[in-house]
Image (cartoon, rainbow, N blue to C red; front, side, top):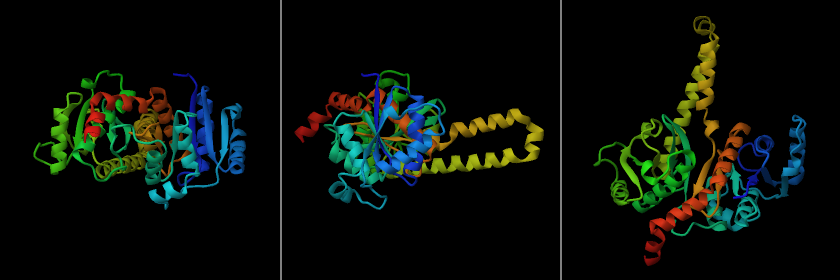
Length: 352
């Protein structure tokens, strides 16, 4: 693989648009000298923001930043069908087309999730054998990280879909772990309890499929808190459960961070515990801050596509770009493609 990294960035997605994207891009180029970026959006507006941001830095990085003029933007109100039919020249679509053409190794956007999924499937296409691409991300755990999917791309999932999510999740988790071999990666299904009789008929059937698959080290059902304990490496669920679990966890972490900040500001805390405790508290807040783990991958399409939170700050969008770099360096899409070929899923779908 080439040592040069090329990313496409949708500058107009999300609540803050280029105000968070442009500073993140400049920072990314400074930290990764091998990187080149294609930034999609209104040229004049982006050039002004880039110039303003560069005034704050000594190093010049514009030779590695290409602005591609696009005026059409996908809003949060745009539904997937409208995006596919009427937004083919939008900043999001053009970034995906750049991936499809092989001009870049990954695309990053904070835009509309439904539109992104629909356009990714339309422009890039599903990997052969994949029924439903899933949205997944690595989250911190007691032993390193855990890969959670689906995070909202698919509300209704069959047992077969969950089996495919497990296979794709294993390949994604390999990027974030030093362990090698499928047997080393523990896979679990998210459920309302760990007992075998709990959950819907579909999730119990998914458990049977996972237990019967020799390529999956399935360890059973887990509950929401188990995602973060380090007991498993991949947690599989439908998009409704995954989205609720992830956003609930982020809300709790933000609340804990706010409480920690309040405690830190109290004079009695400083007097009794001193500067060392304050430094440790600040370090903890930094390590668990949700922005640090921003960036989810659409696994199952023919290309590396990274979805950032819609309300991402500059720091959060930068982290999503780092996630895109990791996926591009490991070529996650190619890994999933190879895993699907080895699983025999393509053959079974063709026969069906």
